[in-house]
Structure formats: C-alpha cells, structure tokens
Amino acid sequence: MATIIACFKWVVDEAYIRRGSSGELDFSAVDYKISDYDRNAIEEAVRLKDAVGGNVIALTVGLPEATKGVKDALSRGTDQCYFIADPSFKDLEPAQTAKVLADVIRNRVGPFDLILCGEGSSDLYAQQVGPRLAENLGIPCFSFVQKVSLEGGKIIAERRVEEGVEIVETQLPALATVLPDINIPRIPGVKDTLMASKKPVVTVKKEDLSRVPDATLRTVGLAAVRMDRTCEKFGVDAAEIRRFVDGLRKRGVLK
Amino acid sequence: MAGVWVFGENRELTLELLGIGRILAAEMGTTLSAFLVGDREQAKGYISRGADEILFLPPLQEGQSLDACIPVIAGEAAKADPDILLFAASMRGRDLAARIAAKLDTGLCGGCVAIRFDKASKTFEAERLAYGGAAVQKVAFTKRPAMAAIPPRTFEPAKEESGREGQVRELPAAPPSTARVVEKKAKERKTTNLPDARVVVCAGRGFDKKEDLALVTQLADALGGEVGCTRPISEELHWLPEELCIGLSGISVKPELYIGLGVSGQIQHMTGIRGAKVVVAVNKDENAPIFGAADLGIVGNLYEVGPKLIEELKKTP
Image (spheres, chains in turn green, brown):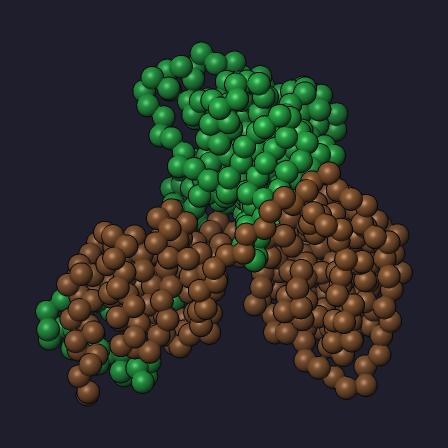
C-alpha cells in the first residue's frame, strides 16, 4: 500500500501561441492542458497504485480557472485532488511553486510514500519544481527517471544520465521526476470523466498557506522568437524537383 | 567574499563554463572558481584555462552518485557567498543545480542561453527559452547568489593561456547519501557527427516503419550529411538512438542545409534547428507548421519525393 502524490501544472498549450505584429506573444487563441510530462507522472502514479495498492493524490497550484485541469487529473485515475488556487498564482516561479507545494504537503496532505513530477513543464520548462520540492521536504530525489518500482519500503528507479542509465534506490518517502518515455498516458473515456466529478477535491486558498513565498527570479521580458524564413513551395513532378535542387545549388548548400 | 563558481560534471562541460565564467569574472573584477570531483589531475588544465581556484571534492565512495555532493557544494556556497554559480545543464547538472538552489533559497535560471552582468546596477540578467522555444524569457535575480544552468554547447570552451596560476582548495568529503547506485548501464554510443554536420537530414513522424528510415540515410549519404530525428522517433518509437534527437530537449544543430522528411515542425523541434542556414521541408500535409519556418518546401509524399530527390542530386549540373 502506498500513498502517491502526483503533481501537475495546468498550462497554456504552446501550439496555440501566435507571434503578434510587434513581436509580442499573442495568447488570444490559446487553449489549456495538463503539462505534457505531468500526464506521464499522473499515469505512472496510477500504474504504481495498481501494482502495490494504495491511493493517488493529484496536487496542483495555479489560477482558480484551473478547475478543468483538476477534473482532467481525476479522470486519469487519481483518487482525490488538492487544488491550491488563487488569482495571484498566475506566474509563480519555480522556487515559489515548490515552496507552496511543500507547505501544503506538510500541513494538509499528510504522510506520503512517493511524489512524482514531470521532468519539466511544457510552458516554462524550468525543470526545477520536482528537485526543489524534494529539498524543501528533505527527501531523496531521482530526476529524469524512465522506469520506477516500489518494493519493501524502497523506490528503485532507472534514471537517465549522460553516460547511459543508472539504477538507483533509496528508502521511501522519496520524489522522482519522470521522462515522457516512462509510459503512454491514457486518454480518459466518458466513464472516467463521469467518475471524476464524484471524486473529492480539497481546495486550498492562499490564506490557508503558512506564508506566500517571495520570488527569487523576476521575469523582465518575454518576447516571441522570430523565425524569418520565406517558404518557397515546390511540387513533386520531375521539373519541380529539378527546380528545387537548382534552388539548393543557388543557395550554395550543395557541394 | 565574491566570485564566479562553475560546476560541470566532466572536463568538456567544465571548459565551456570556464569560457563564459572568465568573461563574467573579468567584467565583475572578481575571481573564477571551478569545482572538480575526484580527478585531481584535471586541476592544472582548469587553471590554465581560466580558473583562479579549484574547489576539489574528494572521489565519491562506492555506490554513491554525484547527488551526494549537494550538501558540500551548498554548504561551501553558503559560507563563501559567491556572486554567481553556473552549472552545466547535463541531466545530473540540472538536478544538482535545482536542489542546490533550493538549499540556498535562491533563484536559478534553467536552460540559460545568455547571461550578462550590468556594471552599473551590479546585477545579472539571463535569458532562456520558454513555450517550447517560441519565446525568449529574460529574468533578473532578486537574491544572492544568482544561479544558472547552461545547456552544453551554448558557449565556447575556454582556451589555454600560458603562465596562469591558481590554487587548489580541498573541500570536505561528501557524507554518504541514502540514495545508492546499484547498477550502471553505459549506453551504446553510436558515434555521430550530427552536432557539427554541414548537412542534416531529419526523420519525422511521417515515416510508417523503422525500415523506411533507410531513405533518410540514403538522402544523407547523397548530400554528404548526417541523420537526425524528431523526439517521437527516438523517444516513443525507439527507431533511432536518443543522441540523434534534435530539439529543445535534444541537441541543437547549425548545418548549412537541414532537410526534414515527414517532420511536422513542432516548436520544440524547430528550436533545435534555428541556426540552420537553409531549412527544407518535405511533408504531404501542406498545412504542416514546418512550412511556415522553412526556406524551401516540397508538398508531397516523402516516399515519392525522397527517391526522386536522390536521383536528381546524382545528376551533375
């Protein structure tokens, strides 16, 4: 039996971000999603629960509008969700997020065996919340994990390092951040979504936190990256392919 | 106390940090210190390439991994109060940097691609990519020390200078961590010249099966280039090794010519080819995003276009 916490972030789907006329980011047409690799973390938490028994608590911090994300997380097989919500939590930086999560885990969620996070979020990809959270809670951390199991009060993980793979183990409680190839996250069905609405959600407000941590980083600029290419299109018949290869030759990129 | 401190898990990574570290230290009028784990022989080389001080960590005990050094590095930084700590953002490096930043309760710019010191305000400003590479985020630090994790190959490695001197300071041995390494598996490294290739031919999701990637190799051979791939090809399908994965989470390439076969053009991938001189896309979907970021595009089935291209390239002009 294990109590597993799966952390997730409700983020802007970057595929919908446009570049405005003066180089600003245009968020007007964006949709939201559970950050890609956090879906792997949720999936792995549920798979571990299926293997050893116990329960999975989904945990997120963000804007009150993220209720859709809470429901999405619950429809992916988690048992309950702690939703830390406040209108001022729009742009928390990693140090703040990790402190808020640690605060709520310590003071509200209670004892746990394992925390799983994605290796990084698909919006800012700072790759810090997992490792920082582990330090804040004073527990061991394995990052970039591609395989994980729980055995006799221990976590055994396969983590990716520069030279290959390291198999590491430690006593629980511990934290691991997972790589996307650890599993293929399920796509919730209608039944899962219906069941999700019946699962408990604990909403934690800003006032319920011990304190709201100060930022250690300040964003002083955010601008769209230019990709200036003028795409000349070609067809597939012989004449077009010839014209295309001539185009490459003119640009001096063929030897 | 002050100074620029750098940590890279191997020599190559450390030399890149010494390169940028030297520039910052000169602007700040301070010293440059480099961590070195285990292999004292490297100290001389680091000093001749810009380090004023070597922070030497004794070799790790059997079954311990680099994580064990976290308390020693954080403890030393808390005591000596450097201005800035730079980490090479290998996987271990990213993990170490984040955990040390938490211990020091300070800000860390992850995936840092540029860093500047402002002499007037005596503060740092760093740049990183956000939203899969669609945006550049500029950050300022509100606490000491500033920290940054810098991806490999972002900065030029430091060059050797003659007559440089420096000291070696030995730090206490890391107390054993409860985390143990029980086994190591070295990956089979396929030697690749991809990072420095003049021509890159990249395989994307448009391929139906692994065997069909022969077409990518044939086209690369015809052009004297190297093969690369998008993340799904290496990470999901495991058709090619991960070191060939181009993009934000893989490697960046700067070829004269990049050809994407069946590559849709997700922003995370396109970020890795931003330095390419000419970008070519072959995709049957004329609405694929890659056409918006390519110089030349062929709208067509790669199974038809590929062989025709190889044929045409064989003809001398």
